[in-house]
Length: 120
Ligand SMILES: [Zn+2]
Figure (spheres, rainbow, N blue to C red):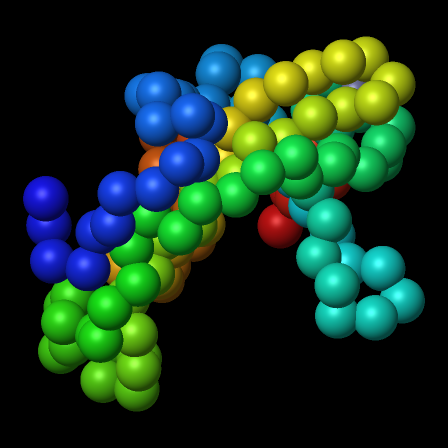
């Protein structure tokens, strides 16, 4: 297990992965009137907010990853979330971390589709 990774009860300890419905640029999100961030259902495509049913801290450790480009980072982390749409019943997974891709233009990746709302 890499440094900082922890066992937890997320997804009942079962393997998980986001489906094709959330990969390749299909999962969007936005803030409300505050700084609170929401994921939006990729299936409903009408800005329906997804619930976060569960989360697991998969990694939380002092920063060691690529410090040459992340000199100000205090910690390395990865959080996995189980997401759900009340409207269409989508159930899926997403992860957020700060020790993977940390800069540049995501739509420059040929594997990421560019949503029309993000055309610039
Ligand atoms: Zn939905």
